[in-house]
Amino acid sequence: MEINPIASFKSPISGKFGVPRQSGLAPSLEGEVHLLAPYKRPEALRGLEGFERIWLIWGFSLNPDSGSMTVRPPRLGGNERVGVFASRSPFRPNGLGLSCVKIAAVDAGQGIIRVLGADLADGTPIYDIKPYVPYTDSHPASSAGFVDASEWKRLKVIFADALLPDGKEAPFSEGQMRALEEILAQDPRPQYQDDPSREYGLIFAGRNIRFRVEDNVLTVIGIGEAGVLP
Image (cartoon, rainbow, N blue to C red; front, side, top):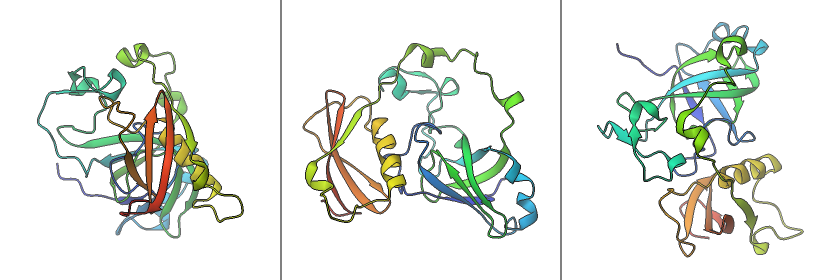
């Protein structure tokens, strides 16, 4: 079967680094689903305004298939291997992702769905959209294997005082600041790296965010233009 994108995703995160590891982990993160021709027609979204959430079926366009039948989930520290089909690794035989996101607004005329909490990078191809139906899609009592046994620790996020001075224009809107803190709190570093002297960076909303992590505290040390060190 050959499939083609029906939409493209617009996000403030332009690369793999910093993308939330699962949908819903950064609930303030805004993004937009832009329908592509010939699907960019008002009738394609008719009735969607009555739903609170949707499923997005999309492509890991930034990741080639590694060909490996085992992967190293971040939840297990990035060193222990499990079968690829027992994980949600982005390195998959067919490179398909599945995400449940919250609808913020539907603009049927423009073919745009504004969503919250997506774990997709900017430009990600979307292959299908389906409404989330709680009575069949929600199973909160289900066991989740190694996920249940491995607690994910959120980091405390702080900004160096000089980055957010009083009286000066903030680099991001209030909503973007919440989303950025949620992304950073999930610890975007590779889980096998724990060097407090190492400086990391990610691109968010056109800005280069530089940070370090020590003792479960992430400190943002610089905010500059994309591609330029602060």
